[in-house]
Length: 344
Ligand code: F6P
Image (tube, rainbow, N blue to C red; front, side, top):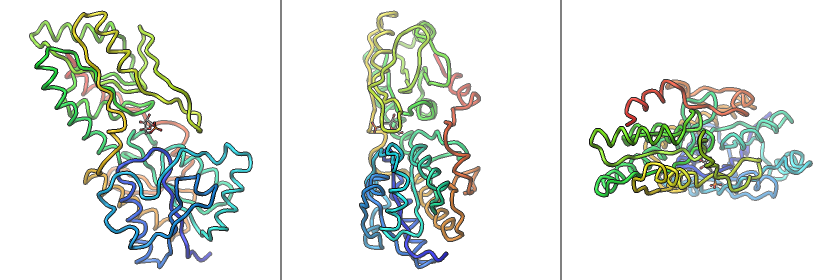
């Protein structure tokens, strides 16, 4: 098959580094393979509704340091519609796409995998600030989010210390605690609570008490939004998205209240929310996004479809989409044990 026109879409939550991928794809694909690119707008919504724009050198000029995605994004799941898969395949033809590069997290990549199984020439690029995609050591966006949280923790420290307060800082990460653990280590958290570990308010309060006993009268508690607490009802879910995922946010307030109630120290809560996803990507994320984009074009050129690019060690390799999707990559015990050394 001769490939002439390639589509690229970005799906799911936006993430710093997406524009680096788009730029890498277009620059490499135009220069070395003479491809023509079409930017599919708003993720899978664009494939369902034929929303696209031409993507050439002019469109990608100056986008490397920009956060978000110039193509827009959505959490649309085509397979919610029984005919969704066929509609996407039909629209590939209508948009004259010979191949498609789908950049996204587990949801976007699961759709890509289903389409690949239907014979669609698609390759995936993993993306998420949560860093929870299997078989890739890192995803771009994560480093930026960690740096934003670490800087916030530095700032929280000075006000915590001035007021002798317990400061609870809630961070994103959905069902994993990668952002909480990395940023907590980098920002000197006194306790980190993540979904992968068992936690209780009793233990948390005990750690804070011991810390105060040794003369420290402020504490920083980093909380991953998806954490579960054994001895308190602190579930903060506000519904489900199109892929059936719970929408999280607010657990920090519930935990903060419980801490204050049980220990009596004045407590304040900061929810960092979408600040973690916005703005310019770090150099690391720009480089990783660029490497992923270039590797994705190479997969298209090799007609090696149904695959996803991934970072293993310092190598970019291709793995089957089927291997990457469906389960989350959890924070490993050894890493959390390093964080634990500094608790209290
Ligand atoms: O998956 C990325 C992420 O930022 C999660 O950490 C968070 O739970 C979720 O997306 C928030 O989604 P939305 O932007 O749709 O509220």
